[in-house]
Image 1: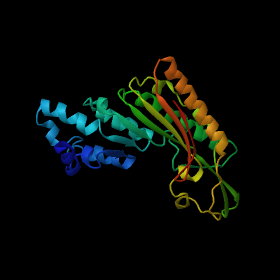
Image 2: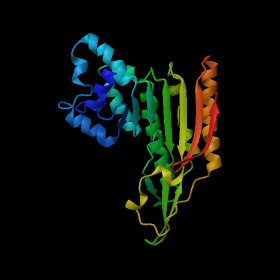
Image 3: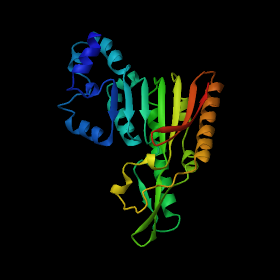
Image 4: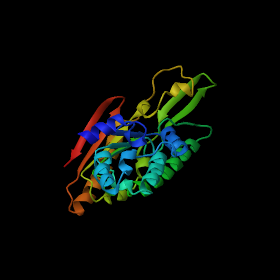
Length: 263
């Protein structure tokens, strides 16, 4: 109880600023790199002695929920933690924007080009994600949130704009479940698909829309793709003789549209 109160009160170290929910965005990660000499990741109390460090770190990090805003931030924070072997204390993590698509709008300047650009971006992000997540080898709970990219098409000069979500299934095609199956201590896995406009920040800050509504992508096909991926991962765990709870969710806005659990 004393340690927990110390973590809540100590705001100079990065790990204690929002403890026990540690959120990492691109801006946050950039500020860590700039201020690392003045703002250490772990609090000074953990550096008092080796025995105190070994007692404090499990209380500090194993009870924390690491929330990564995108795959680039996930990779860079992992390298920072790995340098001090702190990544081995991460037990619960949320990886948002796994595909690297959140907030991105692809302008269709020529037929098929936008889909190609979005697909290439998804492949790069999936590669980074797959090579990074396996380093958190002692993860017990993982929540992976996936976003579809949005395609913007100018229909009539600069006044009428059509915005639709690109096919989500082709991005899942590049998602490699082997990285997740290699997490030997994992007990719970949730894969959440964010649908339609919920996958972006305020899109109107980038483009002008006459119509305030965004076209939703097909919920049924998205759920089918998510279920297929979760079933594939669940079967992989079963083959390993492991009983990992796998959950598939489809979310639109703040509402969970549908949820399936593989026990």
